[in-house]
Each structure stands twice: as C-alpha cells, then as structure tokens.
Length: 196
Image 1 (cartoon, rainbow, N blue to C red):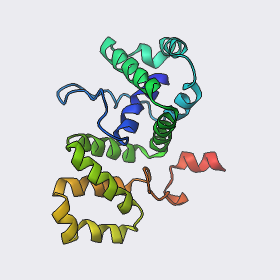
Image 2: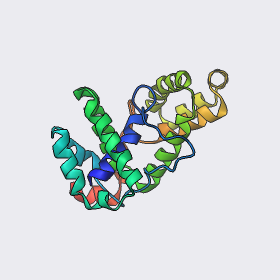
Image 3: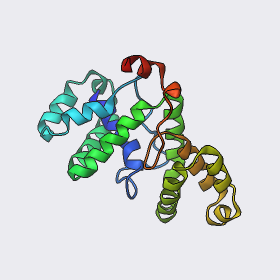
C-alpha cells in the first residue's frame, strides 16, 4: 500500500500552496492512475509518517505493489516520499487529510478529481491562487447559488471558461476547504456498510 500512498501525495499536493516541486513534464506518463480499487492510502501514510526515512524505505522495499513498478516509477515514488518527509508536521497532516478525503470518493469522483487537478496544473500559479479563493466560497454555496455565481457576468469577467469549468467541477466534489459533506445516501455502499 505504501507505493500507492506516495502516489496519492500528488493529488494532495495539488491542493497545497504553490506548484508541486516534482510535477513531471506534460509529456511524461503520469503514474497516479496505478491504483488498486480501494486502497486507504491516507491511513497507511498516517500510520507510518513518524518512521525514519530508513524505516520507510524498508517498508517500501517490502511492499508487493512497489515491487511491481518500473525503476522509473519506483524512483518517482521515493522522491515523493522524500518531499513528504521534508514538510512541517502541520502540512503533513493536511496532505494526509486530503488523501483520506480522496479515498472516501467514489471511483468516478476520484477520476473527476484527477482530471480536474490535471487541468488545474496547467493554469499559471497567480491564477490558481485566485481560483482557490473563489473555490472556497463556491463550496459553501448550494448547487443553485453556485451555478448562478459561476454564470454571472462578474464571475465571467474575472475567470475564463476553462477556469470556471474547473472550479465548478471541483466545487461539486465533497473535499477541500469549505466543502460540504455528502448526504449519507450519496456515500459509497461500502462506506455505509462499514459505518453500520
């Protein structure tokens, strides 16, 4: 599972301040999609975050999923884990929380989040910051209010069609700052059964 925990960091980092320091160039294959159906990667990383880098490396070396990866993918994962270990404790917790939120999404929502985050990476950093502020407000609105704001002339004058589309898609997901939790009926069946 650790291999996939580190992969998920890329999703978590996407929501943190600034660009991810090791985003691969656009022509490099992304390895985030190498995920089993329902790993609980945030939980694994939370449990192992306090291990020394040497102990984490040992855990990586004994991880069966990690062993199946190519040498390039293994190196990318090790680089991401190194970056994670350099974060201050509060930021580590935010990363882990985002990973747990991501784990709670349905497979369709996870794919939507990956697609939207990929598009968001192409937006210049100064624009991304503006979008993040607007997104926090949008997430606190009900769907009808959100749609009105996204389509308002004021919002159109501030954000282009692509930016509004990304924010609208992200605001629909029940994750991130200001997000409203989904009603129980919308949760995954496996989650509902686990809660009973």
